[in-house]
Image 1: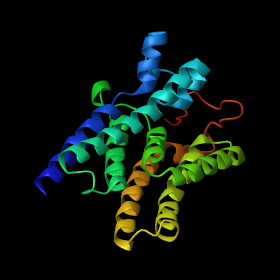
Image 2 (image 1 turned 180 degrees about the horizontal axis):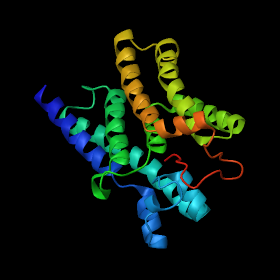
Image 3 (image 1 turned 180 degrees about the vertical axis):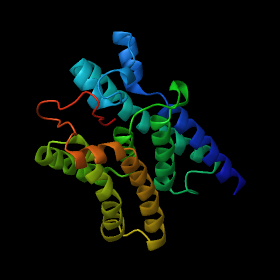
Length: 228
């Protein structure tokens, strides 16, 4: 038990520190010598980077934010394998916990005054490692909602709501996980979703007011906040 707790603490710390490496902030500082948090929607994420600086910085941001989530999970699994033994822990549970820590780091980065992005890309990246089937479904779902609604925020919030439901259905009925483990995974996913939805509270208010910017179309106001 001591080794499991120690491995968990180490994994959470490493994942948080990796998550705190905000790709949008780093890319914009290196390429443009500016702070993305002072431009456009002032959100340190992919959509604001794309709007303010174009495709290349946005592509680097995409690669960086996806990559750090993947690396955080892989390192956490390695730490548990080294300290506990490869057959003595649940890989997905470790991945979800590591992912939450990386998302918290992305949203509240210790290196940048705890002002980061919203965690959508990072939350997606952990699925590539631990739950590719869910990833293969949730990404097209996001794309379809985006095409229909034309709002990144609507697609992000809808995906966050769908995420724990899909996790339970796939893990229990398709992958035949034991109910107890399935519930643990669903709860961890629900925590992730709740955090993502909370970070979109300003978007929700603007959607109610009719002032949210569409991803496709004319920009309504400079202060509209996007995703990352």
